[in-house]
Length: 172
Image (cartoon, rainbow, N blue to C red; front, side, top):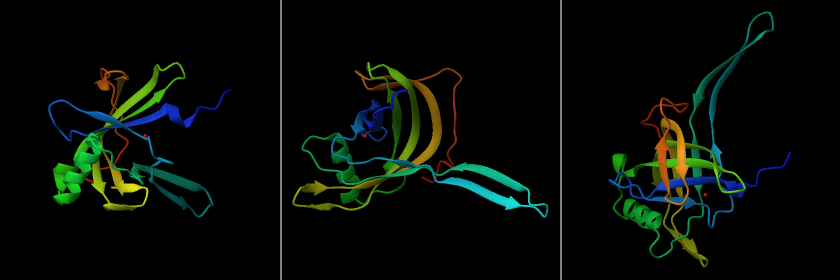
């Protein structure tokens, strides 16, 4: 059984932030690491007999994109710069993200789309270049579907949804 290389797990964020036509860009070019922290809400209790009861109440998924380098013409950088410079909040920070697992031959194993909040953490950087690191807070409405890699489009599956995230207003 072969280990799946990290490059086959792709994350695309809609840099249009709600425009009529999504503009998905892949996270990952300069990232050393991108991990979605699931932050499971789990409560474990023991009764007087020593039996363990586990209650799992869902997830509060979040990730950090740091560093995120500025490139001229990069639509994600332009969107982040606008959010940071204009101190935008609320719905101005909401977009969608598609997580895709690709097979080695380039076909899609699975794809899920979800609403996310994108919040810049800082603006600056070191001698390596201008950076706007940001946090991604998954906000729910997670649906399974198909992903067209060449067109960068997501099509929801029929009758398939899986919303394992918390409240929609919480936030490669």
